[in-house]
Image (tube, rainbow, N blue to C red; front, top):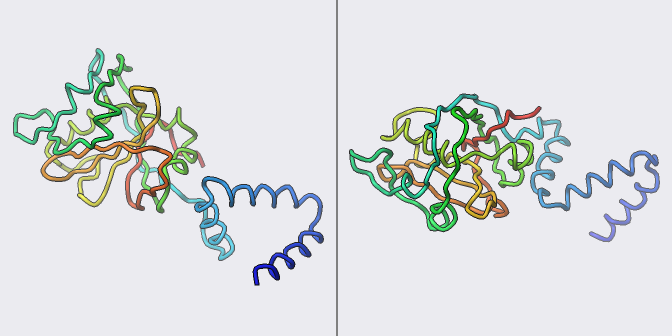
Length: 218
């Protein structure tokens, strides 16, 4: 059956106008590339005349005021759920401890603009990063993440999602200047912070929030 289908495809390719072949080749490149699952999903939606290529929905943009001086990650990201904690943190993942704890972020701008988006379908990090304009535009800092967590130190309602089955996703460079995905969820009476490879094929669930420093481009 596969051979018969390939034979039919060859016959149709011969009949295509010359100008169409370039577009078809581009489509095949996308369907066999690293984001092939996203392209196949959206192609099927297009063929069904459904809205497609809607990966993220812009929610809001806001400024965070940051205190001057270097941000020493190890001094701020500390597991502590007591009432005296600046931010209640219930767990730091092993990857986060290995990749991020020794990081010292130099003095940032006094204010940083953060954009929040809702993930509309299950997506890999690379799909999200591409949609938001690339690594430089999607990148945030642990300084900014901590500032957001501090505003909701007890799990109050706010910008960050606080249901344990919903996550907040950020992209931050580690001590070796490599971009990593950072997941922040409210769990066990505090914030649980984990880090992941952006090359990981795992797909974040629809409904999660993604934060960046760039407006979603239409």
